[in-house]
Image (cartoon, rainbow, N blue to C red; front, side, top):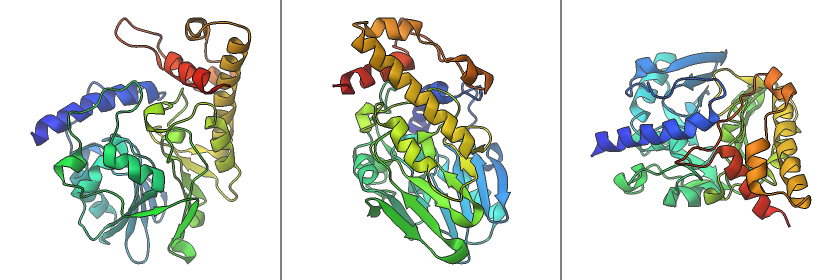
Length: 317
């Protein structure tokens, strides 16, 4: 059953990542869970990004232990632990989950019960249900059902939360709905870095997950509040193959704000959702900056452009 769950989740993750994968990585060849399949980027002497097996994981080595941001797909928690042991002999003490999606939280179940798991209060509620992301099929069971609740957050916050102090300080910020209703921005002040999770997945159209409280109308506004944070140079994204910058984040705000204005103008002009979905194209300046043009509708499923446009359409008064 566990193997079937992992394989099923990998298929779903391929669907989820396909709409996020502006980096163009091939999802069909997703490897089996192993430490060797994970890649590590060193950002500072004590901050790393571990890629592969789901969403990008931040590894922050403090004086007393390791703080992780996100824990990947089902089956990838143990390989992640093995990879961390290659970086430090200190134990993992804290996990921060940026949002509820299975490719960022499922590895939680593989960590010792002594590890403190932290998330925004909305994310903690959503993780109990593990609803499928909008437009993405769901696995028949969740890892948290299998674990009888092991791996769910027990510490939550509303607006901001500080963990640790001095050079080990980590700041959690919530700025409103965007990708989901509980997206956390994780700031490492000593490294001048921030993990944005899937609110900034990569250079491409995002998943606006209405099933989990996401808002297309508020998306850019939420990002703008994060972009106003001081002393951040490096942005760890949810899925991009490299770190990005605050200037990249500000361009992403423009990208998402422009899409909302396109939908708003179409609705005001009496056009239809079909017209938006069939005619919208990524503007040239974003293509020049490495953004991808998302696929159109297929016979089996609507495009991400259509799904996001419909969500925004319904949010508009």
